[in-house]
Image 1 (cartoon, rainbow, N blue to C red):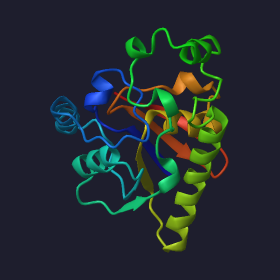
Image 2: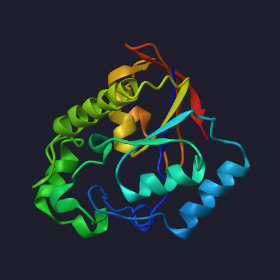
Image 3: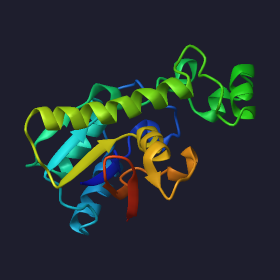
Length: 195
């Protein structure tokens, strides 16, 4: 099965380099324009089914790219809960000892009052499998499924199953970008990048 992974379009929080996890944001005008430009340039592969995070920014992106394609919402594909860092950017967090500790750990420490990286990664991988089970339970047999989700979600799933194998941050993509993969039930062969 071909799996397309697309990070949602840009939001105001993304423009301001804020930690936007559980915060509900819609796409900003520049984010909508960029997705529309990518659509006109035929950057997004066709899909028979969309799987989407429940967050508004993902649903809005999916409707722009795949307006007539059925969509399955998967709760566990939502972005990480950044706890006390939520809604803030690095400038606002400068001087916060907890933020400096998190930076010094290369992002391995838990977010204060938020999710641990491990819990987030486990949840999103569980969400991936849950989405595949929902598709199977509904008797659907799509050849290509587009996952319209968050950057961290893409990185978590591809770190676990992507081939060639790379670490979490190697799979980072900008808003509106992503990967094309072929999934055999065990591993995802990276076929190429979107943009």
